[in-house]
Image 1: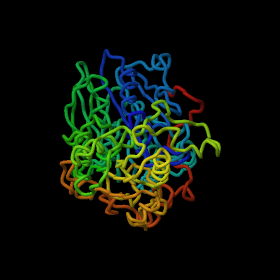
Image 2: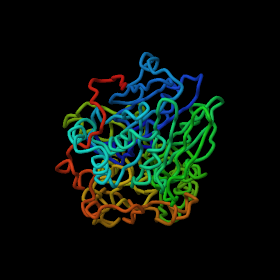
Image 3: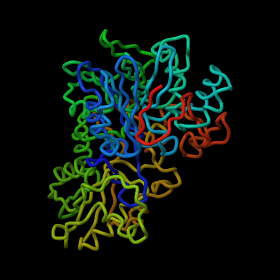
Length: 515
């Protein structure tokens, strides 16, 4: 997800699915500003976090409208659509599905009625106790909602919306403070009612969430880069286990759970934009340092260091600087290849990586290359890339990876493959090297990667590398290594049944939603 053009380095082969982050979220409270357009530009900055759907909800103090559709931010919204979204509060969401299918009904923000109005919600992350939460919805609101829960949206976000929207006796804020301590897993939330913008982060702070200041308002966003694009100054991170409320009375904070910070280390490796800062550490600087440490741990005799653009570039810069081997751009990328809904033919599949990367033959011909990438998931892309470089005349291809082997699935918002599909499961680096036909293969050590973040290991989740999960999972989740909603028994029927929400079903494409 963290590439400049909003697509995955690992998704270079048509039909191949790499690590994807769940979503990007954005919220703004700014009377007198065009909040829908601010949300649009904020989502543009977060496009790398999700390319399946995009949506914006706004409130003018009397009603909330939601506009959402499948596709990229630039495909979903135009001037006319944004002009319909009037108000002084807005939230936005760019989605990649890790729970629920990729359909219009699962696009966010979700929408539902409350005791005093409406709630619209956007969620980044993945919940691990969805079955328990579904049971809580039925316990509170009765089995009469079983049918409503079983249609429409299929996401854990829909269950959260149902819990927040369903209490007739309490305000949204009071309901949220009662519900959030019962939610397990990773969640960075933005949600609104007619008058207030809310932001909340799970007690582990797995996914990033930051607070920024506008001249006439406030902004919350998944990354600091989204603050920059709308001209907001960084104030601080939303603390793990904290809920922030922003309204005409200013900003107020409530700590709903004891913080036990364990942020996702893969944000530093790959997910976040390089111009973002996390926990005071520049992501770009962390990636350059990973490259330096990678060079010290895995030296190579070579003529050039080349990156796999774009996510491998900072680490390649660090590797070149530390090793003294010249840095070069040996691969050129088609910047205009984004998400496509066109099913590639077999002929196009055989072109594979060349759709998005092509070698600069005059640069690499006859050269011994160190090729730096951020991670290997299935290995298909690296295998095709090595073959392409050899066909272009490379004398040797030494692959260097700025993260350790990815051996375990993520249950907190990154859509990694199952364990059986991860190439590092059951294969040593030497075997992987032979599998991708490289001359050598070297991974950074876990200790080297963590040291580059300037964060203590105790404050980082590295479960995809170690299998040690900081948030308790259902036992079958670790056994199956599959999407959490595909392997826990749900009260609505067989695994995979729709979870739905208490919300009415809104049909259509690019539709405006309102209660």
